[in-house]
Image (cartoon, rainbow, N blue to C red; front, side):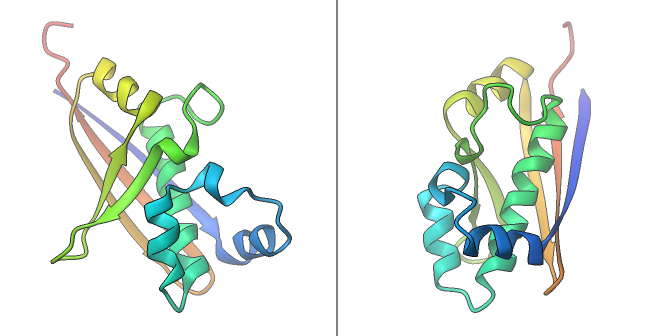
Length: 130
């Protein structure tokens, strides 16, 4: 077994500035579910900032970083209906990449204030015999 982690910290103010000035194409970064979820929140930008941090933390955990064939909107965060616990939802190249790595379990933790958003991703890989 192998454990990989990634962590990221984002400035909520910088994210808000980019969103309000239309520097970000939101649908190229966030899944439709993430945009719908955050639209109903008072602190929408904080929620989006935390989800952006999770995407970067995930890319760090798998070891690719940005721009290596995985689109940010292929990495999504969905909250469990009863507990509210966030979980990673992958599609496209992101999903294919974790399958190739042998990822057997993924966990994500999000936190945010009015100034900062952070995310921590932990991946468990089945690396025996490889």
